[in-house]
Length: 310
Image (tube, rainbow, N blue to C red; front, top):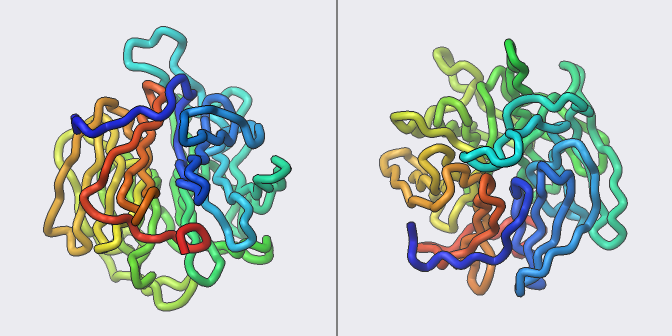
C-alpha cells in the first residue's frame, strides 16, 4: 500500500465514477445510495441528485452537464458482510439501463437513451467523451442467478439524436478510455482481466480486427490469476491505468501491452481512478467495498479530459 495515500471521505455507499472538478471538489456516484455526490476538498459531502437505479460511470459533457451511465440497480451483500459492501447481481427492483443527463446546478435528471435498434440497454457502466462532443460507453449487462447478459460498446451524441452499437459481444465490458490521439478506444473486461483496443477511423467508427477477434478489438494485455478489471484512466504518456478488483489496486499497462505493472491499494474492490490537481498529477481513487475516496501523488500526469481539463 502506498504510504502517500490520503483519505478524503469515508462512509460512502460503493463510490465510483470520480471526476476531479475545476473547483477542487470531486463528483462521484454512490451506486448503493443511488446518488450523484459532491465531495469538497475538505471532505464535506453533499448530494447533487438522486437518480435512483444504479448510477455508475460519469463524465462532463460539452454543455457542462454530467452524463451518467445508469445500470438500473444491483442487489447487495447484507450488512455486516466481512468482505464489505459488494454488488451480487441484478436488483429485485431493477429499473432498466439508461444514459442520463444531469444539470449540476439544479440536480435535474433527464433520460437520454434507453436502447438502440439492437435492443434495450441493460447495465451501462463507464463513459468517455471524444473531442467532437460524442461519447463512447460500455454496457456490462446484468447478472442473474442462472444467467448473464452479453455486453457491448456504444457511441452516442450528447444531444440525444444518435446512438449506435460499435462492438458486440464483449464479455463484461467495464472501463473505457481514449488514447491521447483519439485513434484507439480502450475497453477493459471485468471477468477476463483483459484490455482491448479498438482502432478508430472517425468518431464512432471502428476498423474491426479480423477473426479470431471476437468483436473487432485487438488484445493489448491480459493478467493471470484471479483478478478482475474495472474502470480506467489514461495518463499523458498514453499508459492505461486500470482499476483492479480482487487483487486490489491499479494495473498500469503500456499502449503496446509490453509493460504491465500493479500498484496495490488497501481495498480488494478498487474500482476507479481519475486525475486532477495541479498539473493533473494527483490520482483520485474509489475504494468501494470500504466506502472511501482517497488520493495520492501519481507517477505521471493524467491525460486531460475533453470538456473538463482543457
